[in-house]
Image (cartoon, rainbow, N blue to C red; front, top):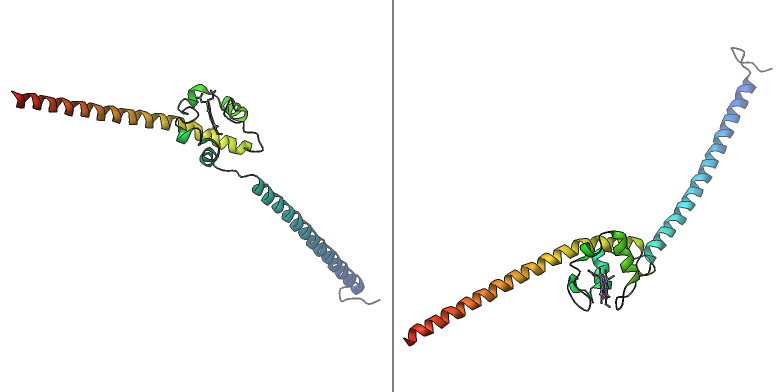
Length: 169
Ligand code: HEC
């Protein structure tokens, strides 16, 4: 028997080293195969996500409004459809507003999920909630300015009339 200085069986040592190395090699190969498999799964997932992204437009609320609603509710103002200034009052909950948009009414076309996905409908509702009060304020502001202009014109006309009267005397 080949024996080391302290009575260690050299053969056993060599065998242990060999086994250790073999195990290590197996583990290494295994992990390589696993990372390869994981890489494949990741690639498939990425491809799926890319396709989904391509199919769904996921436009912003404003973009959807311009694409789908603006022809009849021009900038949220009266067009073929009414001004959208009272949306928050007429549709207090998002559910009601969403159901209305999905369904449509009369001339207003319905918006099924194939045309407008849930995420887009959500963005659109957020946009409408902000658009309504903003347009309302803009219209009130324009009305105030128009009234001021009309008042000024009336005052100027009145002043002219007085001046003419004074000249005639
Ligand atoms: C073809 C024209 C048309 C298009 C496009 C259209 N609407 Fe309308 N919309 C109307 C008409 C007409 C009404 C009034 C319906 C009625 O009350 O009979 C209306 C009513 C509404 C109302 C109710 C207003 C209120 O205060 O009662 C909302 C909200 C509305 N539309 C939002 C939208 C949104 C959001 C879109 C885009 C997804 C859109 N509309 C697209 C014509 C249109």
